[in-house]
Length: 288
Ligand code: FAD
Image (cartoon, rainbow, N blue to C red; front, side, top):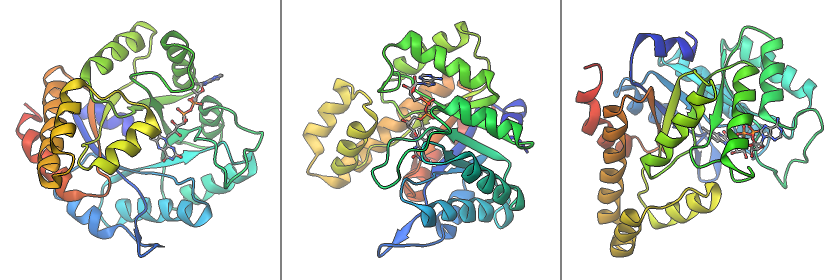
């Protein structure tokens, strides 16, 4: 089923993101994680596409294939384009077709020192058009409630987002955010610009000091004063920080569902126990 079609059948849609896991530095399958997440009955699971080279990327497709074939859950495969030529993308799309993987999150990706940028695709909208011309794929795209870090301003950011939808993206997943007001303002801008596809709110529970520092550095999301206070008080008390991070994410999700969000996309960090604790806190609000 196309991901966008799922939004015609229920609200909110609940989904998870996982990444290809490693054990002792070696890539392994994600079956244990998926098995645990399946108990939470997700509408789809997305699998990230690494900046770490071919073996990681191949693992993305293997994991997505397992999600579909072994666990009977709809997967979305992430696919970045900056370091790929059209021929590379053709090869990947053929592989995805062979595996029955027709839902793709089309991304530009970030500059990667280990993989030189190629000239064929400069932005995600170009990849989206290309994928649409190559088969019956359902394409999702990324959006940024606080604006993408390279965008000159929020107006321009919205104009570029509209290009992705006009190119064929029929569903959007948002970057993580910690203040729901950023998401609501973003929704107003998007809807006013004629972007009418379903939009998932991306939520990441911040549960360790190291993870918080990494995330804020990577995506530039603002940390609200309320959260900073929690961090200052519990940064050296891992159990307390875990509880507070889960409670904070749950508070965000309950507010989003109450306000009628299309979908919740939980960045699980491959930790089904945290996902389960959050899910259990809001599951009674779904399908009311
Ligand atoms: P684009 O849409 O191309 O936007 C990039 C920048 O260019 C923005 O500032 C935008 O405003 C501007 N822009 C867009 N279109 C144009 C245009 N036509 N002309 C000029 N400027 C333009 N990264 C990974 O490596 N692997 C992953 O699996 C992954 N998954 C992600 C999942 C989600 C939900 C999100 C939100 C991000 C993910 N990323 C991932 C990170 C993503 O690759 C980076 O945020 C990247 O910098 C931008 O990707 P994009 O597809 O949004 O790019």
